[in-house]
Length: 363
Image (tube, rainbow, N blue to C red; front, side):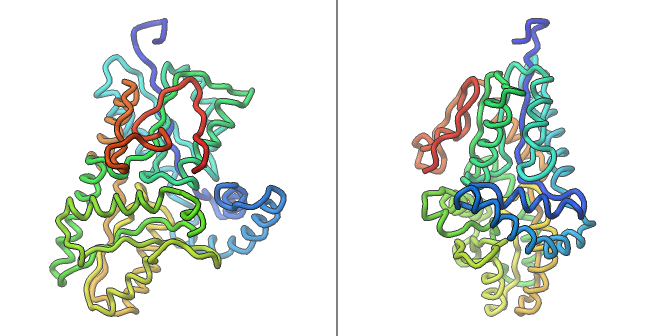
């Protein structure tokens, strides 16, 4: 507790992948992405050289993608809006608190080092680390937490020592399922005017070899999609889980979202696409889903194409996050909803409390 008064200062750190804020930032953004050992799993020097080659090859394509949405990613302002909404929600349910939410992007600004310094300057009594990845993956949640560990906890320039709670995944929490069902239902009703629609839960893809190495993301997305489908009342024939954003020649988990769109076209059924692993709008939703996939659907003979929004600042979503923060502050380590009531194998579900955390060893 802050000795100056009875108010508890709570710093909430929201993690997301980030995106270029101008065309000139596309290449360095991609360079940062592919240099991440969680993404490109090859030895250090080889990774640096390979990352440079991939980034330069991908940059023209990426610039074209971002040019279709104003030349920049909207993910930072989207996440900032979530941060401000979450501040208000936590302030409302945690008595005698002063709450400030900070935004960290993994591959572009604001980066972990700068944000860690800002958190330290806030002088929080408690810090809650909250990745905006509902389903855990070594490529997202673990990578973001590992960078925070390096830049905020072990770095001599910051060395943040406030008591820290970690919220690792929440894709099967009842409130999250309800929030996504709430944003899908009105779009589904529109689609039903065009026939018997098929809901495609589109998650970001993952290389198959990473899944085979023990990454839990595939299981987590399966659990989320099944729970949301059940909440909406969809029968098995009327929904599919699929994956988007494949890059390169590696085998990726599937089926792909485009494959499912072609299947819907062959069956002559309308589709409702919902971004089940994205909680805010960015290039993967605004370009891949709204433009490219829509065009593919029309070419494939899909009679009507609809896209449900990401949860964004949906009240049920923000209130659910606030409740998770409240639970983490109380030290409650809940049973993992993705592992039949057992505790999370990684010790990250709901909350873990330490003075400076250590990212669990990779499975």
